[in-house]
Amino acid sequence: MEQINLHQELKKYFGFNEFKGLQEQVIKSIISNKDTFVIMPTGGGKSLCYQLPALIKEGTAIVVSPLIALMKNQVDAIRNISEHHGVAHVLNSSLNKTQVKQVKEDISSGITKLVYVAPESLTKTEYIEFLKGENISFLAIDEAHCISEWGHDFRPEYRNLKNIIERIGENIPIIGLTATATPKVQEDILKNLRIPNSKTFKDSFNRPNLYYEIRPKTDDVDSDIIKFVKKNSGKSGIIYCLSRKRVEQLSQALQVNGVKAVPYHAGLDAKSRSRHQDMFLMEDIDVVVATIAFGMGIDKPDVRFVVHNDIPKSIESYYQETGRAGRDGGEGHCVAYYNHKDIEKLEKFMSGKPIAEQEIGHALLQDVVAFAESSISRRKYILHYFGEEFDNETGDGGDMDDNIRYPKKKKEAKDDVDLILKTVIETGQLFKSKEIVHTLCGSINVLIKSNKTENLKIFKAGKDKPASYWTALLRQVIISGFLKKELESYGVVKLQPKGEEFLKNNTSFMMTEDNDFTNLSTINTSS
Ligand code: ADP
Image (cartoon, rainbow, N blue to C red; front, side, top):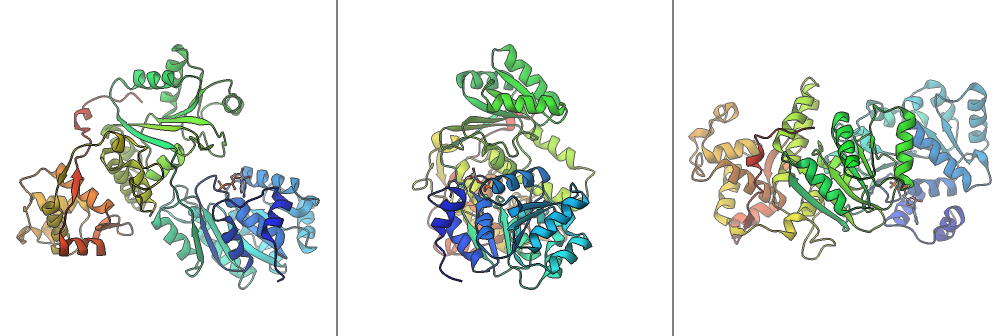
């Protein structure tokens, strides 16, 4: 292929002067027919990563996308930048016979550069047989985390895409794209698509302009939220609640207090929902009180705060939802109210679901608990969760969270860290956090009994300190990379090279005490 001037093509099709983040490298990888895996936070500019190569390359790119509404937006946007109406098409159940015929003709004649399909449409024999005879440039899988049960939006039909593309043609390059950064989801995607040698491009998930804060959720949560919103009067904000009832109640409480707020949840009719959304976008109101139904695809750049009346069910959801603040790079204050009672409520929602799903849900929730109660930098915790190391001293936004601004006292804990690491080793690296703490404190459960752990010398070696102390320290040791929680075994803790190093040199480990939420355990939460 002759040398392509990518900047020129970018300007020609999209009118942009520069690539964002890793876009250019990704596009080069796709153009040279490599399997490619793209992990970028929402708003990072993923669509352009496959749209530009599709426009440049010969043939038609198949784009798999889970939402028909999103597909339509994308197709309209592409058509706006091209003189050919047929340059992008949707192929799905909404088309009639004549329309399908037109799409097929445009693909065969080489006009169509991108065809968007829903995964369930792509399984249709009729489409597979047709596409087999066509020149397909590559397969792009948008929202690729739908492949993984560990993602937040698992779709079984996504798991079949590899088989389908193999039926359509040999050696068609695959491009997976997602904003889900957890290592477990990434591994699932690569495995399922069978592209172990793909080139992976991952942008940082750090959002330096967001300030993260967790507040204890007491009976005063209403007045606390009202006070917070009034202090931010005139600014745009979103308040997330778990239940529709709470959404209605809180938006009324805000209205009564003179705040321009509206509710948003799936129980409202479509007309009210879109009216409330428009009012927010047009700044006729300041605050939307909403369930998580609100926000997908909302691109308001100047949301100045996101409040969580209830803690979300995973760090991933917390990151996505808080991520709607400060898109323009300006201030974005993220406050979440936390109470252990709410965790129990979320646990209860899960009961009745299939066991594997419950186990996953439980493991994700445990990370939320650890995040909320921990006194480690929030940013460091989130980025660690997404597989990124973050140094608060040198990293962007290093002082932008409550735990860093208002630090707890630190104390030397090297001997206790030593004890934790030895406990992990001597118990055969078979235990999750809970059993490690049990072993240290000398309490027995079924697993400890069946492993005969109580016969070990190390059993009870930490009994002079409470379980809560060991839980907190163990978390900090994991965040420091000395130990790792393996997700495929739902959280079994294994020793890492950094931990081995520590055991050899045993220098120093400064621990911070956890935030104390125990005094809240008796209150009633009103959501
Ligand atoms: P994602 O799918 O990663 O959430 P999008 O593809 O929707 O992100 O892009 C987010 C926004 O960034 C869009 O408004 C898009 O037009 C814009 N954008 C993408 N690439 C560039 C670029 N190179 N220069 C300027 N704006 C860009």
